[in-house]
Image (cartoon, rainbow, N blue to C red; front, top):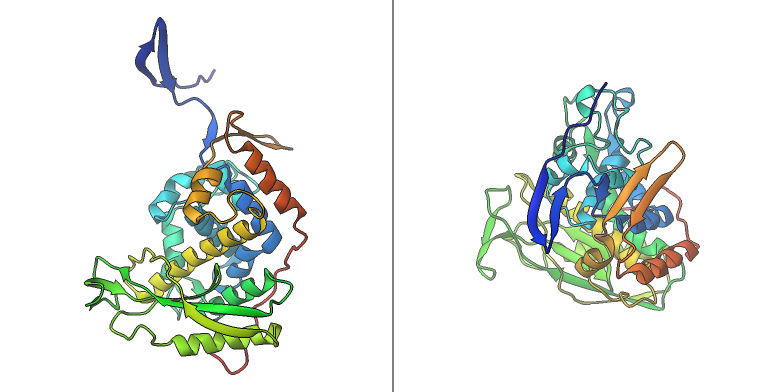
Length: 362
């Protein structure tokens, strides 16, 4: 007869006459239960589904367990919930909440084909790393790295998402352009010293419309801050004009964040920047749809994450049900309920469709 292993007990300072003991026996508890709200945003908008369409997968479909959408969703949800390092996913792959976010049918990973993977519903850092490092010339004959990001389609994806989140065209929009430093601390390709920022850095170009990200272009820092901006604005304006021919369009400056770009090549770092940008886009859609009319409607992404997404919960599963038990003394119960109702009422469920680039533009 099998018996459970004894759990190590941790004895702390007594509370009066009562002992205080802790053990790791609470069951499957997650610290990211608020991610369920982001899953509802994805169900309504299809942001991650559309982003996954910007990749070409040369892998043999008979031999894979994680689709491109699975990989992209795992990475972007991780970034949105504060896990920027790929190493974090070696632990997150055990979390049934993350498996639920990625829509894995088996939340525990017990049905995985390889014994070494059983109990791990998601992939680890190595597979996600291959996603980032696939070269542009990869094909079916490549050994490991076979998922190619189509850069021009990703550029169009951000504008397409912005347009789809605004069914009614405004009378005027303002495009905000900013070149900001992204410090680097190793010998990545494209590494140059920038005198103004007094460091080795990249100089990415960001273009926003209000709080909506339209462009995130990684560039070396040995260029003028405005270099390439005319080409990107022309591409964005042409794409907007196809949908909103009568809107006028202005420009001004806006400050933004830098990203973590520690890969050796600029292509891989560009994809990391885009992953982070998609996470921002998902959170912006959450702010626009879910937080509308609440006390956090104008809150920053990090405030949203700490107050509403990083929620502890106990997860229990059966054949017919997944129960997620949130804390009954949580101070955000009312806010969580408001956000949930906003997401449920939002009528727009955007279908998946291929991104169409403006003719004649790269």
